Image 1 (cartoon, one colour):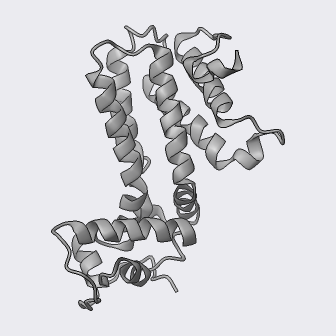
Image 2: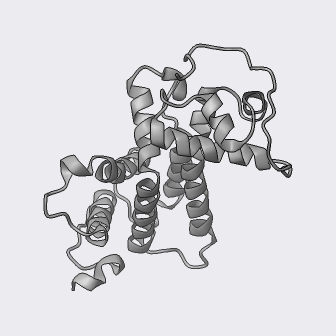
Amino acid sequence: MAESAGPTNPPRDTPLPGRRRRRGEARRDIIDAARALFAERGYEGTSLRDVAHLSHTSEALIWRSVGSKETLFGEAVLEPYNEFVNSFVERWESEPVPLSNEHMMGTFVQELYDLLISHRELILALVSANAFNHARVHPPRGSILNGALEKLTDHAEREAADRGFGNVDVGLVVRSVVGMVMAMVLLDDWLLPTDRPDPRTLIAELTKFAIGGVTGTFTTQPLPLDRHRS
């Protein structure tokens, strides 16, 4: 049975057998174990005891190194997404020649799609936890993903004029593009036809739609991602 959502006191230390870890390695093992369990069992179906068992640690160590179940869940969900956003923005900023809209948006949609496919069950666990009144999983104001979305927005706003973005709310555009890709991954059974397009075709069409939405120009020409169709 999963522990109650209400506040609880940290348990006493109950060390579990295992090899000696380097500094920070136990925390890494805890988050990796939590991510696997939350993806498999959901928020309600996972307890700190389960995480301690899989990570060969203890509940007390989880409380000391990460915190409560809600905090652990947030970190397990957010870490892959934050790593993706940070990596993407760093590569975007380090390009000696600015990327074209097609290259920039195509790479973003492709990598976001791949990330969400890899962590689909974990994202669904987040959606489920939020739907069933676990408000602590989300900040009091805004989304658990808000920090990463704001980072993308800040960078996009700095380049909006040079990229020919029209009179659009860049923050809402960023969220709309992320939401569009998330919907195609999480709601694929509802949205995609029986004769499903291959992922490259889907990603290319999403990219065209996203570029058209911010520039006002919709292209029918193949993008680098879908050259194989021409």
